[in-house]
Image 1 (cartoon, helix red, strand yellow):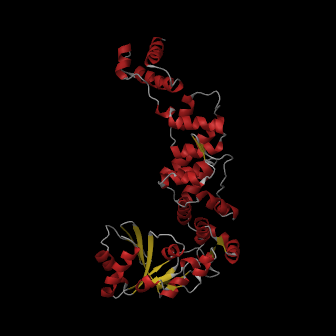
Image 2: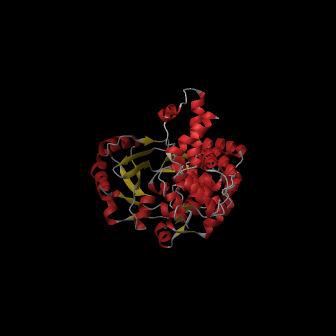
Image 3: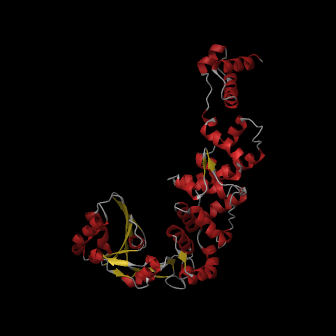
Length: 407
């Protein structure tokens, strides 16, 4: 199944429902930049009541996600597909959600963010690549530049500032001088956005191929300062085993899970945060409790590691510090310490945390230890001994247990 097949499916059946469809936005941009689109946005004109019936008959998805903006999202084979009513928007206040009304294609193109995302193709004309490009998006793609459609774009929706930076890094495009100027004029409006919308923008950045570069570019514009967030770049590049990572973006590419990417983000940029700021930011942004707890634990790990003597302190102490970590957290934390110290963090994750005593409960019974509190205490001390002396054998551990049992 490819894009041509999907266009053909639409064209065969749309007449029955008296609907007109246009491929628009990122999919068209991807086609023009030589990339194969996997996210397909279609605008439609006609009876919106018919669209859901059309989708069910033609694509039969397991689930359709609809919104108050008359959008319908679903998965089909390897594609994420979005059908949206052609609409016009009115912003009554900066950073507020828009008031929407049904519109025509041009009105829909006018309400979009950048010229490169406003290009459309009627599905009837897809094979002929007859582009509908009222804002010269094709020229801007050729010039490799991000350009606003209108001067109030960032005033209406300040999330577009984050979006401009994301697209510039993803596509390796420059932001047009007029659009750069508009970022400077309207960036204060970011403070008017709801925390949920800001959180979503941060999460979208973490899903990009160049998340670190994107975050650093946001910092250059001081976008996070408006949100009372201080991103601090660590002093060392990350390393893992024999791999020295020269590009911090690559550490995010190792993980598909957003949870891992969030842990990396927190342990890279925000592990010196106070508990007060963690709770305030988390409340403002609507972070789940699991993220809040994870963030607090990361800060505690960093504080404890700063006091840890990487030369003299034992493995058991390091295990106590890092026992709530994940690999992504450990990788993030290596950026705060030099190579010799990072080696111990890496060794903890790859080896130390996996060490188990060679004696089991039956072995302890055979030594003469009885059921009860003493058994739990000896088990705990044996675990510490095994971690501190990872090369110890069964006999050494038996001698250790006998000694503490007789003391």
